[in-house]
Amino acid sequence: MGGDYDRAVIEFGHESDRKPPFRYAAYTRVGFSDTDAQGVVYYGRYMPYFDLARTEYHRHLGHLTIRGEFAMRASSVEYHAPARFDDLLEVFVRVERIGTTSVTYDHAAYRIDDAGDTLMATAKQTLVLIDLANRRPAPIPESFREQVQAFEG
Image: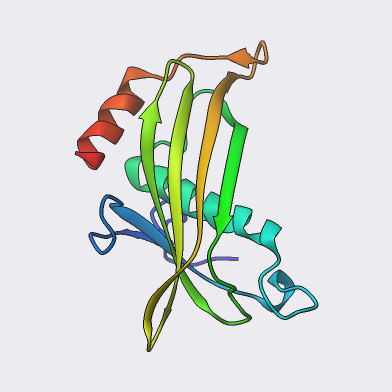
């Protein structure tokens, strides 16, 4: 495998002002394996869509090398409309809150088609930063807070 590209620089996401208060989104397309026997996206498949948007958000801000690891603490999802195979989704993400050791995100996934944008699902997820050495919650770095606040406004 070769190529004249830098994997760390290629983003699947983009800055966007289409759906305030969101300022960042990532595109994804529904694959056949994402659908269930009824031909719609299986509800659990939205989690990887939200993960992709959140990861690309942090790639954009330069946070992929943060010391520690984020672990999911809580996740709630509301489903608004069924997505189907080959639908193009734009998944928006924003940081709602930064606590001492946790970050809460909002997500909204929209189908993009000729009829306009259709809201498919929304989610709120809280992740806790874990110190890998002692497997305990760790404080969110001040640099992380500053970069998010500067981006989110």
